[in-house]
Amino acid sequence: MKRDWKFIIGMVVLVAVMAVICVFFWRTVAQQAALVKEEEAREEASAVRAICMHYGDVLKSDVFVDMDSKEIFCAEVPFEGIVNKAGTMIHGDVLEEGDMVRIYGSLSSDQTDSHGFPIYTGITKMQRIGRATLEEAEEYRELLRSYSLTSRSAMPDEL
Image 1 (cartoon, rainbow, N blue to C red):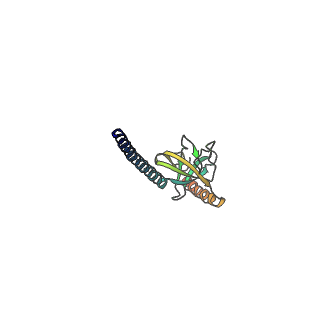
Image 2 (image 1 turned 90 degrees about the horizontal axis):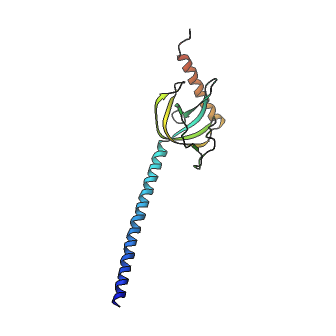
């Protein structure tokens, strides 16, 4: 009889210890999930919404126009590729003129391309979020045309 009580008390203590371990485990999981959600929110807030456009007369190159600040820049597609809205990889990694993307990462520019556009590096993710309407795309084409005209007028005359 004495043995039975020791066994019962031992099992109660073991169950209590397991309950405490489970509580701390799930609390840690919840804290980690909150940190991940916070990091994703920070990343989303710093993402740049841009539209892909073609620039150049003979040799067309892809440039991006920030949809908020209207800044024109170049960016490399990340090694992993481009993802769609659902987060799955797009086969071919090809952006067409008028594709709207969200660009993530620490966008820094320390060099420019042959047209004078900054080249952003540090891109960690590029997500295709949609396609611009013809009217939206035309607005950005006009912006590129006006840039082309001002850059040509700023160049010295050839002898």
